[in-house]
Image (cartoon, rainbow, N blue to C red; front, side):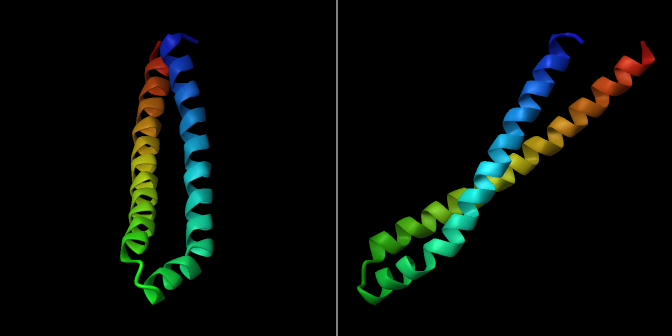
Length: 87
């Protein structure tokens, strides 16, 4: 196992942790902020409502970035495995 293999393994571990964290954050956001957003609307706290919407948008974008990184990592791991099998 060379540096590249160790780097890819470490990267895979970190990305997996990031994936679990963002999914948990999204679940909390979806379950717990709905009543808060409703209160913001009822009390005309539009800046607060916008802030919550921005947080939600950032979480969903982060999920997309993590999925993209996981796909790229899978391709890199597949390529490394093919190269190691040819040696």
